[in-house]
Image (cartoon, rainbow, N blue to C red; front, side):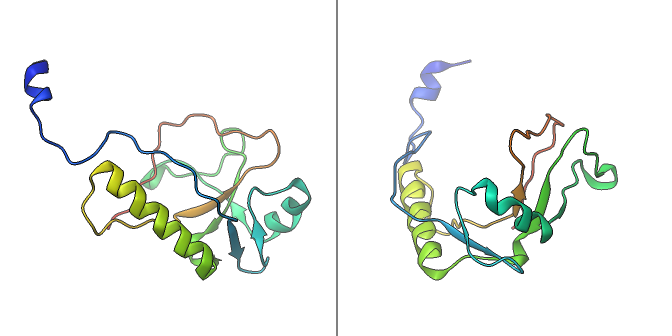
Length: 133
């Protein structure tokens, strides 16, 4: 690898961006109502009632297997974000894009809301979620 060539590359931002914003995140899953984040355990039973089991995999290999992924999901179409919190998310997105040197046009989108119970983790299945724009 030619390190000298890499050092000559002109870029507008940093490789990583971080910071803190005071925000009270609230989501509103359909059929549930206001959901403050982080979710407290007392809210999980009601949240699970409006969720479906979350599959994992890719294409025709997508399956539901609680031995690999014991998780539920609520699709983004069924979760609303109050305007005040959406405005904060948009501001955070703009700040991150500026720090990273990303041109205008970037946006943050909720892909889905995953719901894990206490102590539950997903085993690695090698699958990465992406959104086509």
